[in-house]
Amino acid sequence: MKTNPFGTTITVDDIIDTVGFFDSWEDRYKYIIDLGKELPTMDEAKKDDVHLVRGCQSQVWIDGKSVDGQFWFEADSDAFIVKGLLGVVLAAYNGKTAAQILEFDIEDYFDRLGLIKHLSPTRGNGLRAMVKRIRAMAETAA
Image 1 (cartoon, one colour):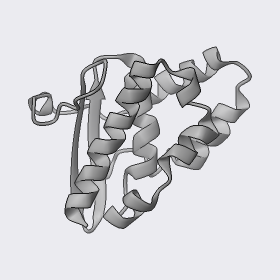
Image 2 (cartoon, helix red, strand yellow):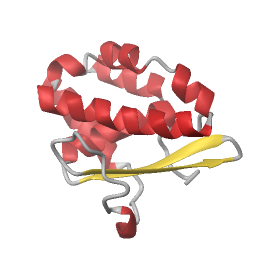
Image 3 (cartoon, one colour):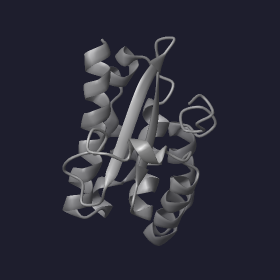
Image 4 (tube, one colour):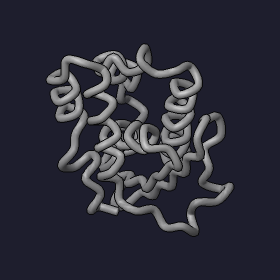
């Protein structure tokens, strides 16, 4: 899982800088969708009820494991924009310790991206459900 670019070569700062470069939200959405195309392929066997994230409008699966104290996540969705949102989230959490995950101010990150106000309420709830799943894994490990 360490080959995952999110949290390594694609960072929170990179995403904030790039999103800030675009003038329109249409261009920002295209960028977020392109981020989703960078997600490593998730094993089909993990696209099951155990890994399914409840509360998302689309189907979303997340799996994570701790390697040498750092968390690495695999994720996928059946919707292009949601795959991109997973990339945004994984940039914040991949390669981090449980303590770093729990300390990270994800709402500030979303605010800096201007993200929540440009998503439908159901997409916003789904985004928070993804974060909740990852934070729960970190809390269990902490």
